[in-house]
Each structure stands twice: as structure tokens, then as C-alpha cells.
Length: 142
Image 1 (cartoon, helix red, strand yellow):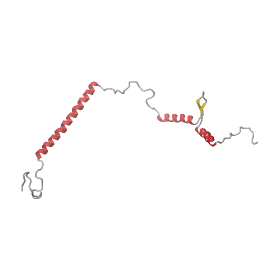
Image 2 (image 1 turned 120 degrees about the vertical axis):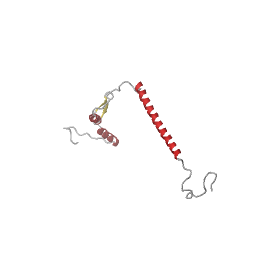
Image 3 (image 1 turned 180 degrees about the horizontal axis):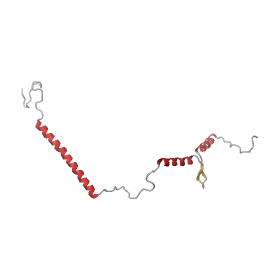
Image 4 (image 1 turned 45 degrees about the vertical axis):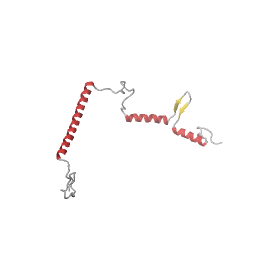
């Protein structure tokens, strides 16, 4: 039985086993050609934009950034011998941390080694006094 829409009421296996209203090969071909044309047009536009930008940059030259400063930075710009610099830095730190020295002579502020500072703080915290060893040739006993 055929309705107004052209469909048959027969099951698919009796109607030939496929949909009778598939896309036509002409419509598929036209769609493929349109897609290929759109891709080709996109490639041409991209190529033209690249060509135009390259010519414009060559004509005007590179533009400096607004953040660019003309003066050179102060001090050395490269670290020539990193291992040597690290060794010197660590030696300076070791001298400051493990040696005696003046921080400010006018106020009487001195620098002492870390071990000695920890010992002094421990003595103050415990309230004990550390006896100094006797001077050579001093008295022994009461």
C-alpha cells in the first residue's frame, strides 16, 4: 500500500532491503566540490595574508616594543664561570657564619660564629655558667 508520501507499508526486506530515499550521488558530489572550494579559498586567503604581512613588515621594518628601553642594564650580563662564582660565594658565607668580626664598630655590635652563639644561648637558657679553663701557671685547687 502506498501512501501520499511515497512510502510503502511493506517491511524493509520486501521493499528491496534499503532506504528508497537515499541522497543522490549528484548532491554528494556537489557538496564535496563546495567543501573543496571552501578549503581552497581558505588556503588562498591565508597565503595572501602571509604575503601581505611579510611585505608590510619588510617595508616598514620591525617595530620596537613599547616596553623596550634603549639603555643597557648595569652590571655584568653573563655569568662567565658559575662554579668559581659559587665557590667564592660559599667561601664568603662560611667566613661570615663561622668567624668573628665587626658588624658596627660605633655601636659595638660584633659577629660571632654560629656554634658559639648557640652555646651562649644554651647557657643563658639553663642559667648555668661555664667555667673558663685556668690560665697557664694559675693556681690549682683551694
